[in-house]
Amino acid sequence: MKKLFGTDGVRGVANVYPMTIEMAMQLGRAAAYIFKSTNKRRHRIVIGKDTRLSGYMLENALVAGICSMGVDVLLVGPLPTPGIANITSSMRADAGVVISASHNAFQDNGIKFFSADGFKLPDEIELKIERLIETNKIDSLRPTATEVGKAFRIDDAAGRYIVYLKNTFPQDMDLSGLKIVLDCANGAAYKVAPAVFEELGAEVVPLGVKPNGTNINAGFGSLHPEVISEAVKQHRADIGIALDGDADRVIVCDEFGNEVDGDHIMAICATDMIKRNVLKQNTLVATVMSNMGLDIAVRKAGGKIVKTAVGDRYVVEEMRNGGYNLGGEQSGHMIFLDYNTTGDGILSALQLLAVMRREGKPLSELAEVMIPLPQVLVNTRVSEKKDIMTIEPVAKAIRDVESKLGNEGRVLIRYSGTEPLLRVMLEGQDKYEITSWANEIADLVKQHLGER
Image (cartoon, rainbow, N blue to C red; front, side, top):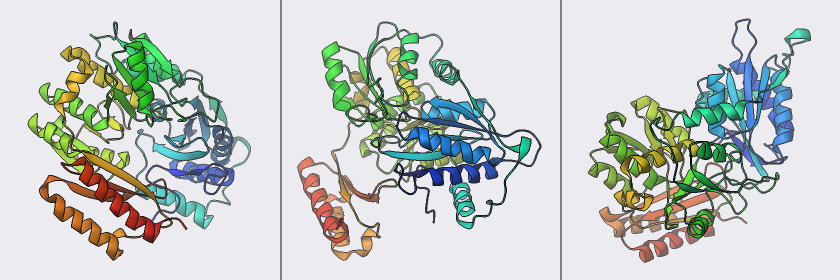
């Protein structure tokens, strides 16, 4: 079992274990040791970050750790997580590091790694990093003189990423005539995202593009779709696009301000790709959290869905193993494997806009391809992550609800991989009923596992 790494790297409150400068330096040393091969060339690791205040101290600690192992560092500054993955692979670096806590509040931060091919590390490599730190195996390895690493700043990283993104949009199309409300969450995409859409011809109404180190995700971004909803109506825009802090996910709203989540976006894009015969094996990869309405929409279009555990890394793993090219999560974390190795909010929005252009239809009409079943999600803070089915009152309540739902709904109970939360998700035909049942289960969990 991993102790440091969660479902998306190491994460926590900045300057509190495990997100300390000491741990960042150790992570840097261990990663450099693992990614440094035996040949004599200079090795390089890319480091990028979002706009959090704590990014500066963690970045410097990582640089110190990596350079102390004789590996050079390429600094790209604030850049979306998928941009760092792209730069890592395009520059033939040995690995990439992202300093970000994604959609979390500014006081949190995280460290996650990409391998040379731009994919997130498998569990076994993360375990190797943990063991190196635990055993102090590499403490005595200290290169000297010319063998010490050095750091370089890549000043044109943002420009490279912008060009790459624009090239994923069909060459025979542009965005002229479209008005887009774009919310960058005061995060990593605050510069690159407006540039991409404007250079493709759109009129952009920018929001959340003035980061100050503490306002990332604060009242803006994909966690607050109501902001783009109101702005779209106010500016009479064609679409609203909201990114999260590191821009690896996106939520949009149509021209009427109605939210269009990741499930709807996947339904639209999968249906379009099936029609154009470019969805590999006519298969979409989604997680167990996706709405059953997505399954129905994809089957109706002639495709099928493969489900995975929650987490984009598991979606990508299934896509690579099965030879699929589209997958994602309801949260708006989508992977278009023909273009990138990880979730990319800007790229996903571009693929959706391409369907709008190709079909000549507004987003509200395209979104009708999927009719979601009523779904309720209740989060409960817990003091420990105990097997929920070993708590008999909770297990009985779950069995009772499953019996009542039958084949017309489902119950999904899972712990968050990054926070002390238990998520109780119900789907069914009657919104009132499933809300009541979800709250009943959550209340029982609170009684037995709630924070003291």
